[in-house]
Length: 293
Image (cartoon, rainbow, N blue to C red; front, side, top):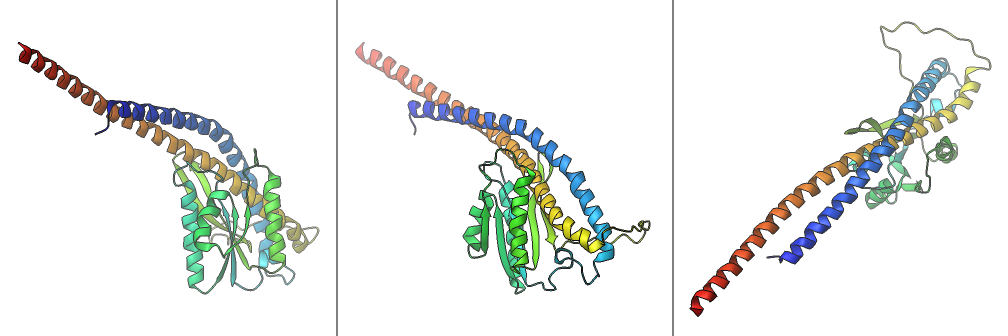
């Protein structure tokens, strides 16, 4: 059985841990507000970009001159999985949930005889995926040195993807990230970005207005599609950032409450042990005094 000194050290250590987790929870809560605002502000722009491109693409998708980013390569053999995760841990199942979705998709594609390549953005996803898919990982982008995410970071990633696509290294690219819903809910998401998926209008939807474009649709799409890729990646990075702080805040709150429960139990054991030791010493003193009479 542990001595009273060991118990005091253990209680003090748990209290120190509780202070750290409480501080991390407060920091995460502070950063979450800014990250959530940025993620929510990016959604309308990304969704409007999708709507504009879908409108143009509806007329150009079947055109012989349609850009490859829209029409595809005509093959479905090589799949690139663009995986966005966090750079740090202590955030519950945030990173693991994204990696689990990627792992399931990769194994499913490989089971169908497809070739899989993985492009990692974020250290945690890279560390987890390389245990199983080390040979499939073709590139890793580390954003630990970036203090504030900007569109330039997404543009750099998009350029790397486009260079590989133009070189014929893959046919389909799917973006994986965690969509922020609330502090306790982050949704792992898979979104195909190359070739762009154009949603068909609903059967009961009102007919869309026909536009005439200058220059032609194909030329407009040639300029818009690469930018759209960067916009979607930027949105994913911002959604991930908000999801990370939400998950970390929730995880640190749980850790703080668990530490409080441990302190309560440890203190109870300490007091009982101390009481038992005092009682034993009193009995020994009384027994010694009676023996001396």
